[in-house]
Image 1 (tube, rainbow, N blue to C red):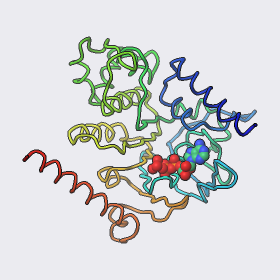
Image 2: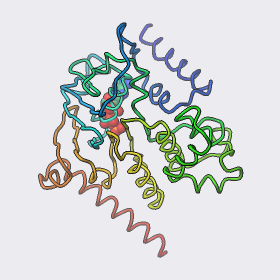
Image 3: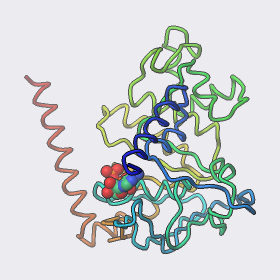
Image 4: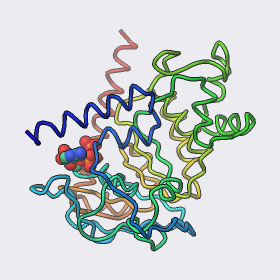
Length: 306
Ligand code: ATP
């Protein structure tokens, strides 16, 4: 009975939360993964963010006792650098970002920010230091200005516009019937995936976190949208310690380090050039991806010619 009751109960909880309009992206990120409760240690202190170093030290993790998802993962991202995490579906890429955000606690090893174990600091201070740009952003049923300002409650209109410009969404907003006062979300104007992602980027620019988690969209966007989003992501990640769950070659090429995760272990690591030269899993992944891209482009050209 317990087994049956628990998931249903959690679903009911998630549903109610969503019904109440609780659509903060970070909350969604949490809810969609139905985490176990993590609570502040009795003596938890606020995280003291200094340079913004992120380190995983021999991290082990299982969602369920019978299946270990991370089997001793170690890396260090120096301040302001970018780590790209690649690997097959189910390898544990998103799990790494969930542990950094402390939706779950590692079962072995430690996750550290500036030398502080995330289990020893308050969740509130940790989450204020980290910005998340998810694949799918959920918008509030409110104006587009409100949706952007959410990144920093109390932001002025000028700050919202500045962030929108940096996120390359300002020109789009100006073309909407009521500009920044246009209502969006489920009951308002529906935005495309690329537009929503740019709103998420604008929010993150306002939040101004030292550490950033980017979850790149797997779905194909048109080339122009993709280039605009890439440019916006590049701008927002500049000077911030960034972990990116990377699906695009352009992102990984620019990363300072790439880790290739396979079945919960780091199978390969290094720069793009080093990994290509190695001719292993990574080189094979990109060979297949390049073929897929070339085939898609050829198909698009054939359609144009027809
Ligand atoms: P993808 O590229 O498909 O997003 P990923 O590498 O990000 O995959 P994760 O989301 O980290 O993979 O998941 C790793 C493994 O953990 C998967 O096998 C997944 O089924 C499992 N898993 C993820 N979330 C949970 C959960 N809440 N409960 C139980 N198992 C889970």
